[in-house]
Image (cartoon, rainbow, N blue to C red):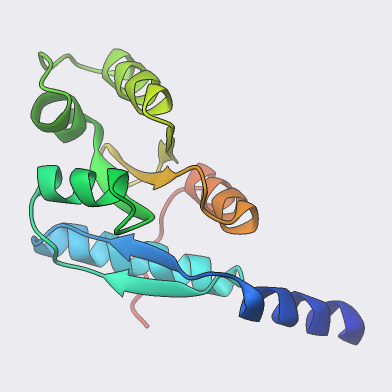
Length: 145
């Protein structure tokens, strides 16, 4: 068991950091910090780039490789980034998810806070990408620590 722990720690230390971005508003920064902490607990190396600007700025930073992931609302992604008509419910999430897949990005399951989800680059370390899917599927619990 100790050997497994050491191997796990060594793998985490050799990984490239996952650069987590967040918009300038307080809710985005709090959710971004919570995602960063969850990834760190999963053994991922995380670099925070919180309070970077608006949705369009973060999306551009993601697509340009400046950040690897950030948390976004389906409604904001649909209307401000993809510039499509707002629509309620699961149809909006599906449309956003498909558009991001076409852009070679991943729109993870909702985080459990409103309609927010983590969107990330496909070249993010597979372990960290899978860790984000696992904890997002169970819902986000904000960290007070």
